[in-house]
Length: 72
Image 1 (tube, rainbow, N blue to C red):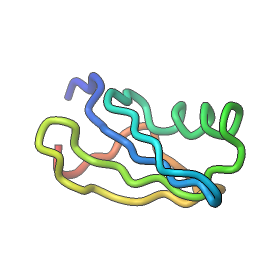
Image 2: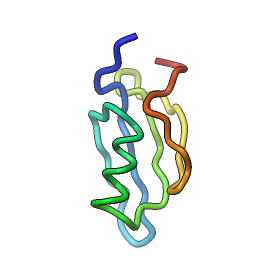
Image 3: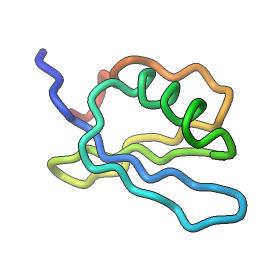
Image 4: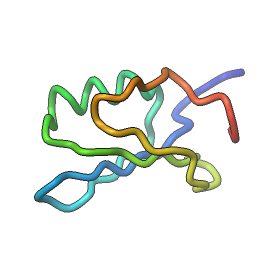
């Protein structure tokens, strides 16, 4: 199964507005990017980019898989 920018992600911060990324490829790499560039993030909601369907939520510090294997 090919995965190419399957996800849209909205990231929530404690004292700022949420930010959206529209073309996310690997979720684990994206979580590492957030830890490095936006260390104050709290959680992220993951959506199917093509259908806009909500898939799941990851809280900072949780184990984030490379890909989700449902609803894509």
